Amino acid sequence: MNGVLAACLNVNGSRAQLRDAQVVKEHIDEVVRLAVFGDEEEKRLARYAIHAAAPELGAIPASIYGLYRARGKGEVGGFTVPAVNIRGMAYDMSRALFRAILGTESYATIFELARSEMGYTFQEPAEIAAVVLAAAIKEGYRGPVFIQGDHFQANAKRFRTDPEGETRALEELIRKAVAAQFYNIDIDASTLVDLSYERVEDQQAPNCRLTAHLAKLVRSLEPEGVTISIGGEIGEVGKHNSTVEELVAYADGFRELVGPDFVGLAKVSVQTGTTHGGIPLPDGTIAQVAIDFDTLRELSRVARERYGMAGAVQHGASTLPDELFHRFPEVETAEIHLATGFQNLIMEHPLFPKELLEEMRQYCEREFADERKEGETDIQFFYKTRKKTWGPFKRQVWDLPEEVRRVLRQDLEAKFRFLMEQLRVTKTKELVERYVEVRVVELEPPRVGANA
Image (cartoon, rainbow, N blue to C red):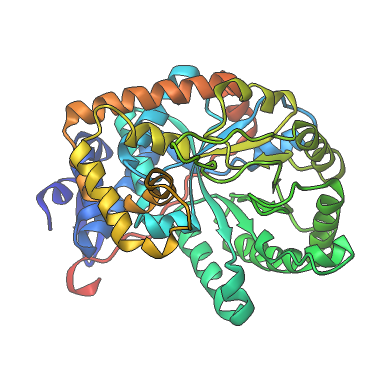
């Protein structure tokens, strides 16, 4: 066994057991690196060491459901929960986010990764969960850690040709996520909405059916004492704006399928005018979009008052102008998903190595040439595809000099703090402690050596 892991773990028979959480903390940089880049046994052992040590050190994977349920009852409000997609520089980015949480008491904050992002960032659920918890340990965070599966999305093309296979793939993803202590999961079957039907109920029916099926699976996998927060989605981001009629058709259809006693959806994602990543113009700037805040307000109100949800979720917002973010809590948006803006901050940072960025650009030109649209400039093409370099270049980014990573962490933290203030999620520590039930779930110790 690796020397660092041997210091952190005892091997009792064929299974590993945590030796000392403080030892894990002392060696956390090395342990998390093994959790990402070790061989298969080292990954299993390092991830277990992190998950076992984190609760003893005060960082406990948790569901935000209790807080969202309170919002659905009208007991809390006036803030919008940021959900941050941890695509690249995952350890450093998570550390920066925890520092911002601690510095502003913005405990109602979510760490997340989408199904598609897991693919191109080469981060399976077990890896990203371990990295987030390692960052919590590193920064001395104590409290619930909300790890979320974002856009667990049905691929419409694959679903049309092989619905059973695509459903099985989503089921397997959910099983892996819950096993990795993702206690917040957003099911996105909005890609299956069929606008060829005249009735909205018929349009939303395929969405309702798959969401209900997967929600039942999530509930069957819940550890004792944990109610996983499940989100749904009615409008594919980048398409036409969502309507109250669609929300009602979806929520009623879902309820009919799961039954009255089923613990239902905590929130619903909607489309109000944004596009994931923003729309790059030929010169690399991002096109301005018109957010329909009135629709967002009304959808959130109906979701709360009629269905007891926390409200509506806004996607594709990280590239919006800074002066817009204060409006989301004003219209009682429950949650906002933020991703590309932080990617841009890192890749466009003066200290990010130019030679590495050029290597990434050449990789995109070589590997994704078939994705290039007619008339696209080089800047537009790289902006659109560079997110797919996080996986292939994961080690190079992880190995950036500490003096570079430190400045990037500081600038990320400053951006996180600004957004937390604008979203009015600061000083939510007491609310989270009041409404969120924290339950330590012990993972099964991994096997060691030949018995693994």
